[in-house]
Length: 172
Image 1 (cartoon, rainbow, N blue to C red):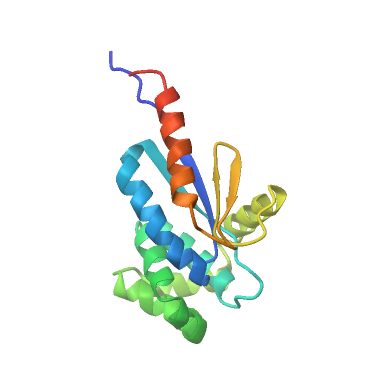
Image 2: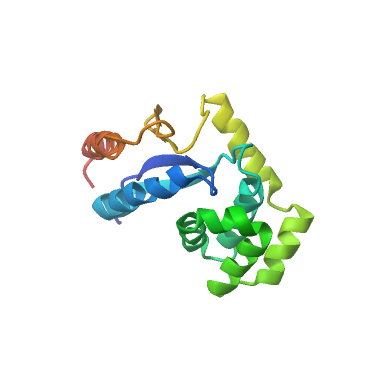
């Protein structure tokens, strides 16, 4: 009989893929993933802001990338070039999909048929319900940390909470 695996600590990151602040936050997310490994489950949650005209399409495209097995790579590629998304819109999203070896025709179809709308809308509705107003916003152990105004100290705060929660897990 095998030992039970401890549950990972969940960190929800409410993000707009056209937001320069979310691009900056990506360094913190990478550092947290590196530090905690599989003990921290980082979940990107969609919160496209109205002021970013391509953010909603980018969120849908990101879900198609998840379906095609390269969600994280797509998120990071889009966030790394938010200015290109601003200028290129859906063409940029399709080009990024091709660069990652994904089926760009399927991306195009997904953006037309709206197959990922419910996921994006549900994330946004949940975010609004818990008080998310800007991006990035982090939620860990029920605590909301708003990085939209300043990200200073957030990585440290998240790491403190994650460390406390991991230490509280029953020993395997």
